[in-house]
Image 1 (cartoon, rainbow, N blue to C red):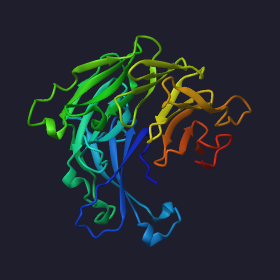
Image 2 (image 1 turned 180 degrees about the vertical axis):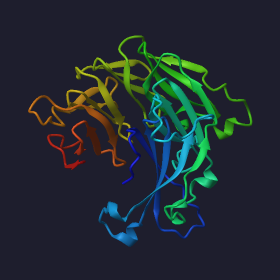
Image 3 (image 1 turned 60 degrees about the vertical axis):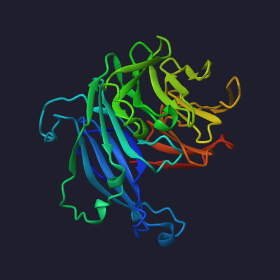
Image 4 (image 1 turned 90 degrees about the vertical axis):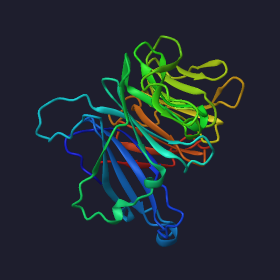
Length: 351
């Protein structure tokens, strides 16, 4: 547990920390990135004992959490809490490996953030240093190191609340880019100023902030985005409840009647899971020529006042493509199984 003062955390991203082949360390380390209300992205290293050491029990108390990096803009500084100046907080943080192959543990780690004003910042953690475990030497007195952005640019008409890195493994050799939702309902496909390793010797990257493509048509604002696991297909959850699936031909998935703030594909790419403000979860079979809903559950998170379901704010599918987790404004996390969607498998509450 880490306290960040008075600022809220708007979003989180996580990535395994690479382990050196010569390392004898049995721990499984993770990096966590927090987009904070003071406009800063904070990086943490989470250390966990190996299964051989701790057994099969999931024990959060066996983890260590160390703040080790402050991701800052080119001229951004950390302000003291008593500073009364209002800031447009950082709402989005995303990470992806800059690697075109199938190995998810190879390549430099690209970190991207966006604030409410539509400013995007890009950092890169080199592959050879990503596995450094500063938590082993931290005694609680060390200050996190400051890492300045490699690129920084403003996106005109950005909503400021919806952005996704385009994984290089699906975009292919060339420019590393981000998808940013805009106020007219379209999604801009924008160069970050970085290129994939194989392209670096053949071409210069497009200037950071260059719009490469525009996806979708003007209309209801995009509230959530998800990339297909293996193809350059995009799912968009919109403010009016519509879900668009943009593949070779676009599909309109109609079931929700309120904003769709969370959606995610299963890693095997067969299913798309969506969640909306009325507390509804819908599961769509995207392996069909015309995607169709195969399961749904109403009031997946129930309000305490006996009213309609609570907003579903986040959704993550686990690596087995069977289980997924939803987070809601009711301060709970529910774990679901796609084959038994009538009720949650587990519920975790937060204080």
